[in-house]
Image 1 (cartoon, helix red, strand yellow):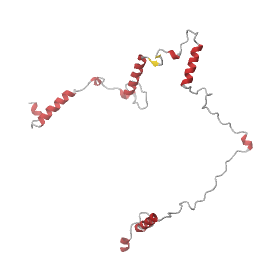
Image 2: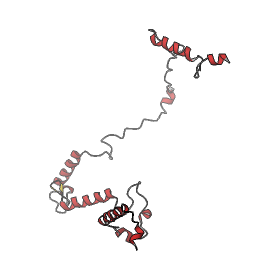
Image 3: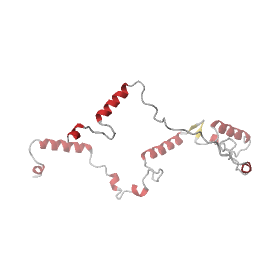
Image 4: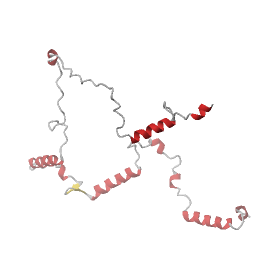
Length: 187
């Protein structure tokens, strides 16, 4: 029993708390420190690359050509290239009375949208921002069935005005201090 009291807890190590404390203090004062932890590890050289045989080299599939180039028909034009192409197209069709250039559309005058187009775009953006559109445009939108109201007249009900609520609260506060009860007002 005495040896149980004399010993100190081991905290999951093979040393008592006092032995661990002295070791820690000794290591903090030590100038050399511990040796490397991977002292006994032996590293082997990286193996060489596995190359196909000379007969198999002839049957290997050619690497795919890069599709990220301007030769690709799906390559996106830069704004400068688009402008140059449209100007060239307009110059080529200058004698054609039926040709309508995309640069001279009704919605754009001098590189800017008309007022009607701007206001329409603004209204659409506000509807998107408020979420007042009727269809489901984003994955985070709830299904349209969940947006239907059971009684549409409830949408027009504005409720009790704030002024009336404030007067009612003042009246109730005045009554609360006098000791009168609300049911006394009904008599």
